[in-house]
Length: 266
Ligand code: ARG
Image (tube, rainbow, N blue to C red; front, side, top):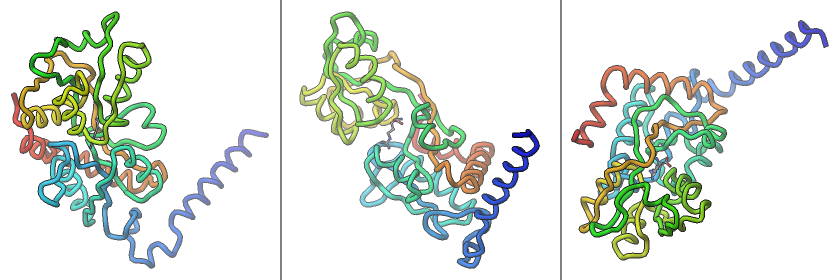
């Protein structure tokens, strides 16, 4: 096929896609013409509120850094924020299926996840750390990968802590991974001696260690990562609006203000 014919075909396709995007039904429903959301007039956020200080329950209310950032984004877009609490490993599906508009859950950007969803700009950094009992023989992260090591490692299912330790420890024959629905459950298992350590993000780790006596966080860090909001690959207009709003909130210091409210600098 001649190049210019191919080009014409491509632009015809682009035009028809664009035409679909602005189907008359949409604006007549009163939907904001700039983008569509899962529920009209609302920004639906999928999260897993077991992850202080990013998202956790205070009574019946979901609060934390991500909830406040989402509220600020929603306000900028003239939407009402609705938060749906679910298992951590259900968030990606909720985004892909269009049930939720934005996944905000201290979620790390990884290449595998980028195949499923689009990530906004990063708004925070996380570090995978290791929690042990105060009298533990495990003194540094490297002890987990030492020749002949055989530890039982607790993680929250499908988090990066799970993914990394599965690769570095379980698949290498250096121990087994116990996967829990919540990070706090993994920490309880550590407390009761069912696991030898817990690999989890540093901020929830601090919160859990402050709550449960006799535990400490190893000083050596495992992996540093970027947190971002997950969004559908099929709603470019909403992605652009949310990402632009988040960029503004980062630039004007709003995000830093929210983070500082929950995390006191060492
Ligand atoms: N940063 C880790 C990940 O993305 C853990 C996130 C867990 N978040 C939560 N709300 N439970 O896999």
